[in-house]
Structures are given as C-alpha cells and as structure tokens.
Image (cartoon, rainbow, N blue to C red; front, side, top):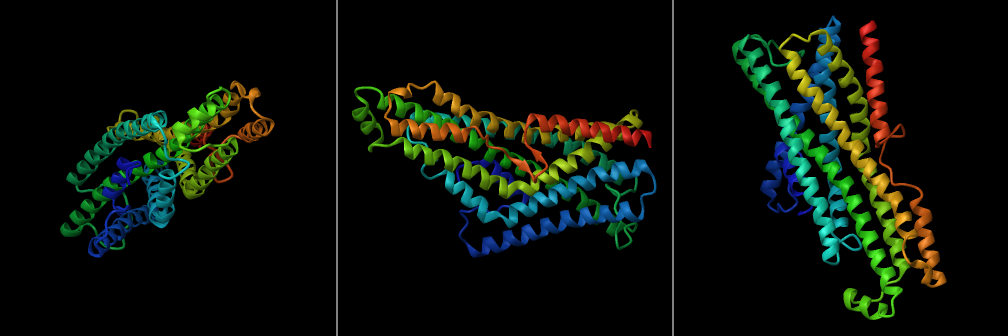
Length: 382
C-alpha cells in the first residue's frame, strides 16, 4: 500500500492497523492480539478516569485537569475503534485511488500527485515532532509524579494501587498507554488529513485533463494529438463521470471518518477552554508548561482538519472558473452541454462535515475558538 505509507506505518506501530501485505495466519493472529491489548489499555484508562471524575473529584481544579486527559482519551478510543472496525472500507478507499479514473496517466498528473504526496508526508512529520514534544513533556511530568509516590494520572481503580508491585505496574501501564494513544492520535489525524488532500489532488488532475482535452479538441491537430497521448479518443462526457466520481469519493471518505470529526470538535471545545482556564489560574505552576504545550497541540490538531476541509471546498468551487476561461465555445453543442453540467455541479462545493453540526472550514475553526472562549469565561465567572 504505497499511498499514505508513512501514515499507515504510524497506525501499524500504534497497534491498530495490520499491514495488508501480511499473508501469514500466525502473524495476523499475533497482531490481532496486540490490537486487542492496545484497545484494552486505552479503554481501561479512559473508564478509570471517568470513574475518578464521578467518584473522587470534588473541586473545579481537579476536574479541569482530569477532563483534559479524559476527553483526549475518549477521542483516542473513537479514532482507534473507527480504524479497526472500518478497516475494509479504508482499504477500499485506497484501492479506489489507485485505479481509473483516479490514477495519474501522464507526467503532468504524476507531478501533481507527487506534489500532494510530498506535502502530506512533510506535514505528517512536522505534526509528529510537535506531538512528540507534547508527549515527552507529559511523560516527564508523569515520571516526577511517580518519583513522589503518586500515579502518573489520577484514576479510580478497583484494586489497591498503593502497594509496591501494583503501584509500579499501574504506573508503567499508564505511561505506555499515553504513548500509544499519542501515536494513534498522530497516525489517525495525518491519515484523515492525507485522504482529504487526495481530494484536492484529484480535482487538480481532473482540471489538467479537462484543459488538455479542450485544447486538443479546438486545434486542427486535436484528433492526432489526443490519440497519440491517450491511445483512445475520449469524450467530455467521460469527464463528467470523473467529476462526479470525485464527489462520490469525498462522500465515502466523510461517511467513514464522520464520527472522528464529531468527537474531535466536541472534545476540542472542552479541552481548549479547560486547559486555558487552568493555565490562567496556575500560571506559576510547573504543570502549566506541560498543559501549554498540550493546548498548542490541540489548536494545531483541530486546525489540520479545518484547513484541509477548507482547501477542498475552495478547489471544488474553482472548477467552474477554470472551465469558464477555457476556449470551449468552439466545441460542439453536446460538448458544451457536458461542460455546463460540470459547471453547475461544481457550484455545490465538496464539504466534509462533523455530523450535521459543523463543516470543516476556516469559519468553523473561528466559531470553535469563540465557543471555547465563551465557555472559558463561564468557568471563570463560576
């Protein structure tokens, strides 16, 4: 699976994506056991934090710090579950991009695809570095807690964790769980980011093909040139189908990762307002530095979704402008009608939505920050 190879590699390391090229039944069984173990760890930490918030926490500061990790773990559980449960749908999505009409046909289209692949890989690495710095600071803080005789994270446990063996086992389990949760976060977010930007790549490839086709058809050497470069005579009606298939790809992509969008947006509002609230009240505490890095990661985390969704919206609407500036009045009446169909369809942009509430865009990101700030003011007043 060459497409988005770095992103799938991170998922494999995190334990939620078995490589598709593995054929050995023994290797598959071992990795499935590893996946179940990872899912157990993250769900156990999430549930134990929930029980601690319900049964133990009795003040707003403890609730603020607990909710940060608890909400983040809910998002991680959602992402891991979606990747594992919808594995076949994700594989089909990749296979679709490797077939016609999505597969690049000439050097220009290969260059477009390569440009987007390199951009996705570059930003995946940068985001990985940012997340690594965050989890490193969190891990250092956790180790300091352990050295002082406290568990890395406040949880409610159905057993006594104060004795030596269980204390160290639980501490190690929590630290390992958070490390794997970070890898799941980075892997899933960059994977979704990559799939969304593949929509932009397909739109640019489509525009490139359409421009060439119109040029070929409006020159006296059109038939010869087009036949020599594509081995067959294409019609604009085929490009109408290609344009619609891009919309179908985006619709399938949105249906697969829709739960992640919803949980991420809802969780981000809670995490952002509570982290800023805690930092504002404990500006001199050493823990505030760790929360500051965590908050910056959260800002970037949700911005990745909104920026990529906004890019798809802009490029999908721009198709009509590209067609308008082509020399298409010289085409036949039927071909003009085909182009008009594409122009009319492109008036409705491709949108990725978080349930029915939020559309991934710059405007949604701005609204998220405003909502978080309003919630922060409410916490301060209370």
